[in-house]
Length: 130
Image (cartoon, rainbow, N blue to C red; front, side, top):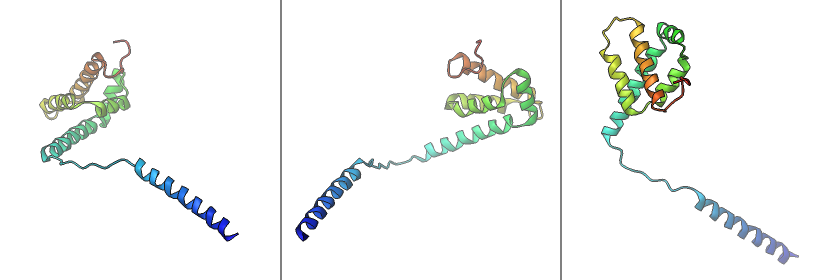
């Protein structure tokens, strides 16, 4: 009787260890690489530009003007989040070139122009008739 219990225990233990070994090998291998300081700075600058544009879109006067043009502010936020590096830099530079103290109309026009450009290039489909 003890032999039978010992045999069942050995079978259970061996199966458990096999499953455990297979599970350990299924885990992915972590690889570390060197992160360049310039890459980190670029990412931080891009995030700052994105946050600046988000802050402009969140202004009440800009939101009102966007809705008047037929564009949802939520769609604009999604578009800003999906802009690539070049488009984000272009939009931010255009916003930086606007004179300080100007109304929201220029901001809306710049955002609207970027929306139309990305829609024409096929990156998004905010304006389905274009």
